[in-house]
Amino acid sequence: MTERILTTGNEAIGYGAIYAGCRHFFGYPITPQNQCTEFFARELPKVGGVFVQSESETASINMVYGAAGAGVRAMTSTASVGFSLMQEGISHIAMAELPCVVVDVQRGGPGMGTTQTAQMDYFQVTKGGGHGGYRNIVLAPDSVQECFDFIQLAFFLADKYRNLVFVLSDGIIAEMAESIELKTLEFDPLPEKDWALTGKAQRGGNRNFISCSNLLKRPTRDGLKALGDKYHEIEANEVRHERYMIDDADFILVAYGSSSRTSKEAVDMARAEGLKVGLIRPITLWPFPQETIKGLTSQAGRFLVIEDGLEQMVEDVRSAVEGKAQVHFLGGIARHEPGPGGMIFPDRIFEEVKRLI
Amino acid sequence: MKEKKREMEKVYGRPRLRKDLPLMYCPGCHYGIITSLVAEVIEELGIEGNTIGVSSVGCTFVTTQYFDLDFIDSAHGRSPAVATGIKHAHFGKPIVFTMQGDGDLAAIGMGCIINAINRFEKITTIFLNNAIYGTTGGQLAPTTLLGQKTTTTPNGRDPESAGFPIHIAEFFSNLKGISYSARCAVNTPANYNKARKSLKTAFQKQVDGVGYSIVEFLSACPGSWKLSPKDAMKRIADEMIPEYPLGEFKNVDNIT
Image 1 (cartoon, each protein chain N blue to C red):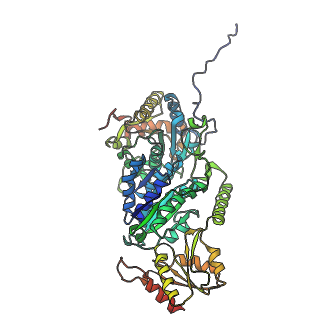
Image 2: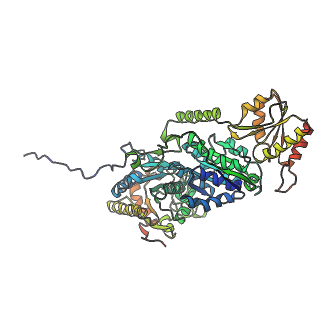
Image 3: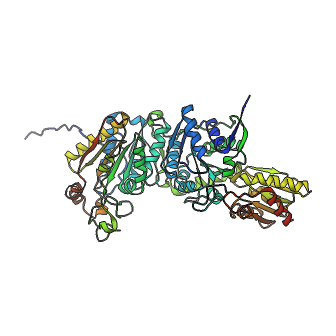
């Protein structure tokens, strides 16, 4: 029998990592992901793992770089401000093609912003916050169960593609408690990490070399092609999204993370009044479910993007519809109160739907 | 006169762990000597199968190619954090060392290495101090001497605007987590032999799990100093050593 526990999104990330076989965590405290770092400090030593509190997020991500280069499953978690500090390391991981997992629990921004929930790091996670135009897979859980499941999926995808995978949470998902099923997910077999730094005695004296530069490991043009091909392969194979009441919908909401939970409730409110409203929830923010949204323009003339911040994901939806549908936006200014604790409630989304219809 | 055939015995050669590749360093640069010395010491200690090197940005970046060892390069100044990740990934078993220049270690990466030392990591750092930024064409380094002309201190380093030369080996010897801190040079056979001994001690401290160890090398950079290799060698004795005295600043077998 699988075990069920009541836990928070932040701790579910920790459980997920342990179930994924991750035994190395490097992190720095920052709100609202502190319970995540604390979980690893408390739990990893119990399963023979290593927790290191770094002096900064810059150091955390470079420790992850080193540990992943050494061939183990390693991760860090942070929140927006710390995530910005990691961008240098993330860009280097992209070039070195190391399988790493990074959790970003979004808070308000820009700058120090607020310590409470928001969805304002979309550009940074999906478009590459560092230099060089790399791509990272982004998984956006909307429940505590998905925090647990997606960390396992993140480690699988990271190893499969030798790529960095982000799990993009937010202050609400991080701190809410739900009942989850603790279960190891099954994935396809993965290739051996014969490239990892383990000391050359392990390989009969042949050295391994990992580089975050194209200068020493391969010709620049070959390097660009290799990365480009990999990104296209991920785009072709790894798009994930959830469809809710879509089949007959002529008005479609698009939302991810905590906003998709409130949007779902708004869909139910609309359906109760006979309105044909549905929801597309992108699960991978990159690769983005572009083709799905484009295909839906044949049945729906209006899309409403709900994002707890300023306009970010809405740009990808506008791009996906290719001018064949109207794209509207409901963002952070629709929160129920002006302070940092504000939220976009379902009735506010429903009100916007009715206004637009 | 009868010609006598002389049998020559090979007494010194390229260290086995230094790969036989054309040297990319400028003529008269000491990086080649120091790289070979590190390779020789690792071979002598018998730790090559279990040793992983980390380089950063600057001229140390190319050292990755010369070592026949597992190696990784990393972002500017971050190699002590990368080394930390590697060391912990294998639960403290491998011998991990970083190769860092003066801009890398003492400017952009100063916070990184101080915190790695203070976390009591068991890592060894080879610090190559040539008092200038070589790769980027001769700009001010934290270790540039007072009055020294660089492309960003065209009138010479003035402490009012550019601060003072920083003494890393002495500075780090004050940190609790340091087991060994020394400054060496390779400008004379005597100094070369002392450097060899220091390097060996530094790696041994890591093998024994005593603490962080660092060896600072005063290294010539004829290209950016705009001196001939011979004059650059002379400058080590005449100007660098008087500012940066050679010697051991910390050598302990136990840290509690």
